[in-house]
Length: 92
Image 1 (tube, rainbow, N blue to C red):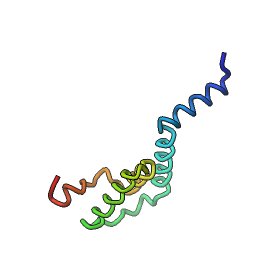
Image 2: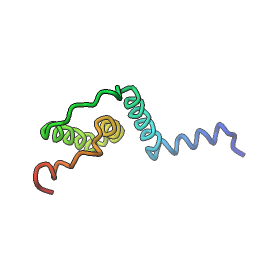
Image 3: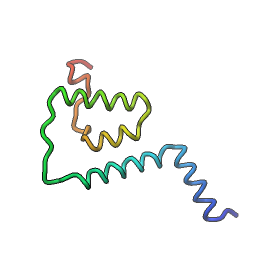
Image 4: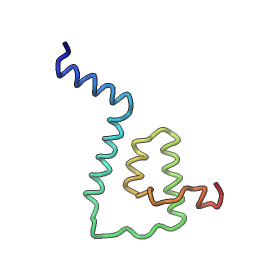
């Protein structure tokens, strides 16, 4: 029968291979950044050009398979509220 340490090692290896641990680490980093951010001060509204640049950077990260960096960037910059580049440029 396997020991607890062996089971932990197999579980950790499996989660790393599936990318789950990397995703969790990225999520934790993003939450730490959000917690450290001054909640009393609102960021200035983004211009149309800055929103487009941010979206291009996010697409670049995803295209090059930097999914953990992209997830941290998305959380920090609140990409959830941004429209995609096709919508901003007037086409799909």
